[in-house]
Each structure stands twice: as C-alpha cells, then as structure tokens.
Image 1 (tube, one colour):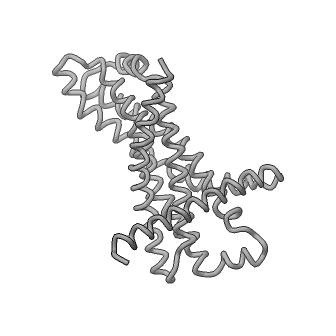
Image 2 (cartoon, one colour):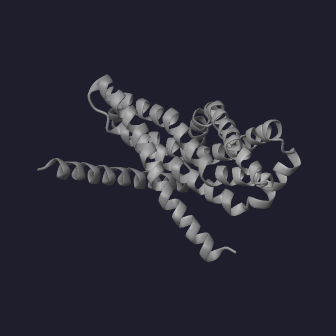
Image 3 (cartoon, helix red, strand yellow):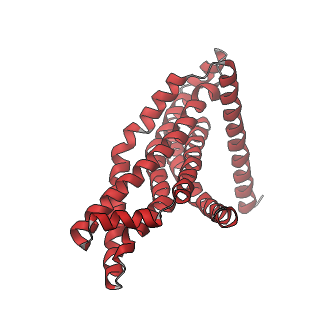
Length: 264
C-alpha cells in the first residue's frame, strides 16, 4: 500500500469514527432527555469551564480585532471621504467572519486541548474501562455534556466577541480616526442586519460542535502513555482549527446563497 493510499485510508477511517461518535452523542442526548436522565448539573459545570473561564481570552481577542480593523480601514476610508462607513464595515466583518472564526480558534486552543488531555488521561489510566465495567456508557457520561457545552458556549462567546469588538473599534475610531460615537453607531445600525448576525452565530454553533467532538474523539483514541496524551492534545487543536477553516468556506457559500435566494 502506497503512502497516499494509507493516508486516504486513515482519513476515511477517522471520518467514519468521528461520525459514529457524533451520532452516538445525538442518540444519548435525546435518550436522556426522553427518560429524564439528562444531567443538567454536568452540562452547567462544563459550560462554566468552557465559557466563563474563556471570557478574558475572548475579550482580548475581540477588542484587539475591532481596534485593528478600525486602524487598518479608518484612515483609508477617511482619505476617500467615506468615514461614515467605518462602523458598518467593521461590524459586518466581525459579525459575518472574524468573531466566529477567531472565537472558535481561541476555544479550540484552550478547550479542545483540555478535553483531549482530560479524556486521554482517563483512557490511558483505564478509567474509561472502569466506567464500562460499572455499566456507564462513556459517550453518555463524558461526551454529551462536553459536546453541548462547547456548542452552546461558542454561540454565546461569539455574541460577546461581537460586542467587545464594537467597543474596541469605537474607542479607536473616536480617539484616533476622529469619528464621533454617534456616527460610528449610526453606521453600524444602517449596514448591519439581523441575517448577518445570525449567519455568524450559525457558524459559531457548527464550530463549537467541531471543537467538542474532535476533542472527545482524540481523547478516546489516545494511546501510549503520557506521550500519547501530548500527541492527542496537539492533534485535537490542529485538526479542529483545520476543520473550522475548511467548513467556514462551505458555510459562507451556503449562507450567502440562502440569503440571495430567500431573503430580500
């Protein structure tokens, strides 16, 4: 078997296993909701670890991105007499692309790696085998709360990134570009539409699912002791970011085509 054939086989094998894990996660979610066994406390705990503990990093990312966008575009727009568009262009850039993408990358680096390391450590210390011995399904106990916590909190964190990004952009626009806060706000209200915000939040939801499921999958497939945990942690971050960037293209095309076809 050639190198390319082996690589293709490994990729298809991984896609199949990730898909099975995803379907198992959905099954156990609805099964637990139906039977009243859904552990809300576990979900809230994971949401706190994933979302609340990431607020500072996300805030720094959002503020700096909004500020840099205004610096890059503000002076150019001012030379063309288009200062009134600065706020709207920054808001569109953040809502459609930068907020969901950058937030997902930050969460993948911080949370995806932590999930892979945690579950990977449980795997090599045979704690997952112990769960199965006690008739506890590992997917139900470990994956479901982490998957949904990632999905929900990335949605919320993206909203937060949009807000702080606008705040950072407005501060720079007022103090360096010479715009008034009223003109910056009016530009945002004039150009930014609900569909732009919802499109970005849809992306964030998908990205959160990717981070959660890849982190769990890499943890479950950990082998080789402490070295294997390190490899799984690194692989979880790299694969998550690559998938986020690749899936973003298809989501962008799909959302734009939907808006053109069905929305005025």
